[in-house]
Structures are given as structure tokens and as C-alpha cells.
Image 1 (cartoon, rainbow, N blue to C red):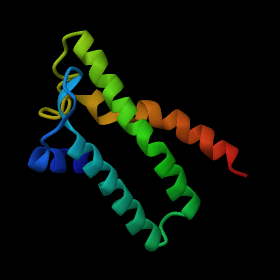
Image 2 (image 1 turned 120 degrees about the vertical axis):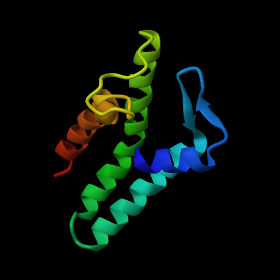
Image 3 (image 1 turned 45 degrees about the horizontal axis):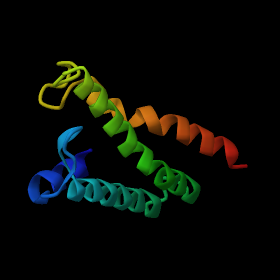
Length: 115
């Protein structure tokens, strides 16, 4: 979220799905992905996680975006601006967890398939 926000708000021009989430941009999407890849690379080279966990995280990455857009669509359908006031200015608590909605099941599935 941080990488997508920073890149999207600074250089984002092309709207990704303006009818669902008008502030999300293609540049932000790629910025978020690059941020995750850089973070994973750093913690891998510091020997903090295994290569398998890096690969599972990369496979899970598209599902984070799907979860985020799914939650945005639900809010749009219900005419809700923010999903709570626990984190003011950040769309609420659900906006902090929305990507996990789709990632956690995929992550669990993949990690259970790896011997």
C-alpha cells in the first residue's frame, strides 16, 4: 500500500479502474509491486526469510491487488467513503486489511502444497 500510494500520488497519471477506485493508477500499481519486490529482496539477502517464502509472496502479490479492488468495489456499491475511523485519512480499518482478504487463503493454499 505504501509503495503504491507514494508512486501513484507523485507520478500517477493513468487511472486503473476509475469507476471503482478513482485515485488508483497504473503507475501506483507497478510502484506497489516494485516496492514489495525490493522489500522481499532486502529481507531475503539479509537471510531473514527463505527463497520459498519469497516465491510464495511473489505468487500472492496479484491477489493483494485483487483484494484491494474487491473492497473498493464493495464500498462503492454501498456508497461508503471510508470503512471506519480507526485509521483516519487511510480509509479505515478495512483499507488496512483489504489486500489480506484475498492473499491469506492463497498463501495458506500454496504453503500447504509445498513439501
